Image (cartoon, rainbow, N blue to C red; front, top):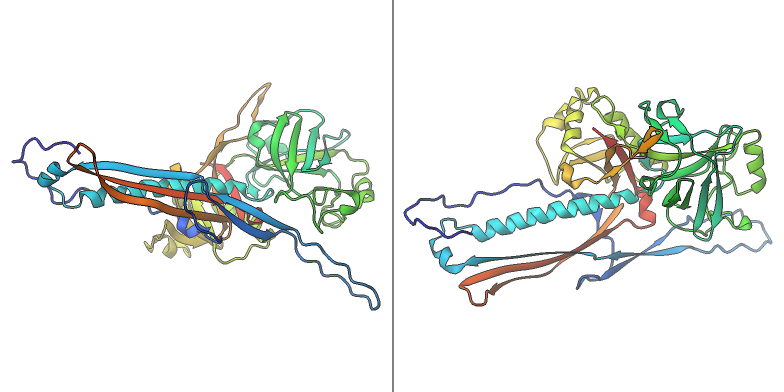
Length: 441
């Protein structure tokens, strides 16, 4: 605070407050962990069981099979540490005009911290289950030439693409969002990490979505199961598969994702080469005309994963809130929700089964889309990650490690200091409780 040079000046009795949006993190995270946080780097362990228990047919006179339960221990690291340290001159305080100087500065500190926490927590939402993204899919159909293959490894699998071709996005049948006629690069690039990948044929074969964990080069990438597991009762242990449903089906002609029988693979793709698909490889356009449909697609992703319909939330930027106000689907039944004026932790309405919260754009994560172009490919357009989920999706842990007021050495002043520790984690199981709309507006 600067020195007052003219004591005859008159000032207001209060310092002007700086106002910020309330944090959304308290409403969208959970604290389902045990343990006490004491210092930076502390770890909180979270136990979960990843496979569902099998129910087997009982035969009289026959011994029952014993199932091994796969347990998983996720570790939340309290990795973030923020501090404040400011001083106020005591002599200056004698002449200060505001009687809420310290209170005002501490309130401002809290608002700035909340903004940083929201951005950190929402970025964790990118760990949603592979297959739970909505955007423009990149699909390369199989045909006379097999376009991709997977070899399972100890940690999941390795994808190898046969060739790269330029594919017009608008001509890819079955995209979740309409194409925009841009030419997409049909090899891997670094922006694909974290997205879902699957094999598919032009007949009846389709694999589950696997997570792209690393891109080796334009023709090769490593993949893993959505929860990182490689064993369990739902894996085809008789053939040593470390990816679920690798010999799968479309759920129409053959059981969805198959039963692990290698012989089915040849039946399912007879006469057809294998194609492939990257989910939400590029950001889709979001507008007042499309936003309601896109929200329902997010709900569908959670429904497919049997996520409970209570405690679901969606965080959107202010621009998309405006689109919801303008959307025809919100008229007239949604108008009361939109204008009733009740906002709690950024929540302003409920739609499509979601409590909808607003977070300023700086709190939302952005990322670059898949490469596009003709000949000389360039990175795709930047899109925002619009995160949806259940209360159990993201676990958050925090603690004020210390807060104190000390005298400044060699000055007639006091120092106000504080250290805040926090961390967040999407557990292996928790990934199925979230979904991502990758879009721009």
